[in-house]
Length: 344
Image (cartoon, rainbow, N blue to C red; front, side, top):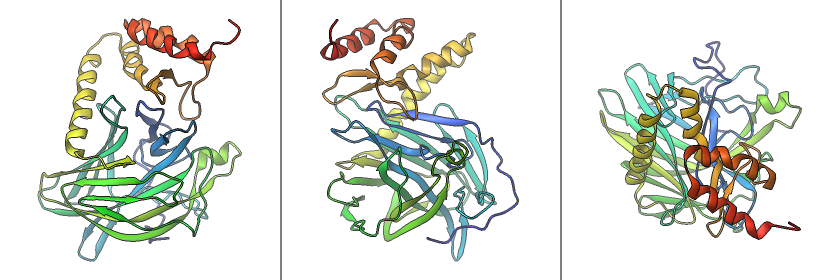
């Protein structure tokens, strides 16, 4: 496993029981703790429903990010390793903002970045993908190294080191693709900004998931990385990474900007409303609607475990659609359910 920072006594600055959630509209999602510590196997940046499959797969589990200045390295990842009593905290001071998209400020002295996650929702002319935006908040240039930690397993299970993983990296311009075996789709990461990729395949052994342990489940798994993405960010500059399955995302910056604009517009509509709870529930309703293969509209029974169950669809449709004045979505979901009707 690559070198990681030692366990320190500094407590996490953010609550561990608060979580964020994003949905990709295709049955996949991203979720995690706001303090950036994965506490359950379901915490991941992109848990995707692979084409033609009902089950979700942990694709991009986490990012090992580091400030690099000469020989000095600041580790930004917050992780709990097997055999350690306490998690290893980030080497930066961390602040979190949920809306309009989950965003963290990570600062160590004069070095500071803002990192924001987004999931592009599937549409008629676009595929689901994970988008990560970095912005240099400091007054001087910085180099950021990002190692994607991949799960590549059924999300209900925990990945264990597999020496048969194919570490071949396929380059296509500023896109780099990997897949551990021929049965899985290619995962592409594309960079907008001054970036390079360094092949450096490695296993991160012994990721400890405390909530799984509390629930009495197996709670130690491994993660795999194909290498490091090197980002050079001038003062105030931004770079965007896009993770996509099958084919690269051709325009990460434009895709992120579009998702951000939609999220910001929705939040501006909801934030000033006096009935805050009802407004926020309405904002999250679309997370439970998804397009199955063929475009059928379905309803997810819940995150992070459940898929689509008939009983839950009909119980939830009035609140998810009619209460928001979305008769069109209700009719779409009911029509989509007709092929499954049996015995009245």
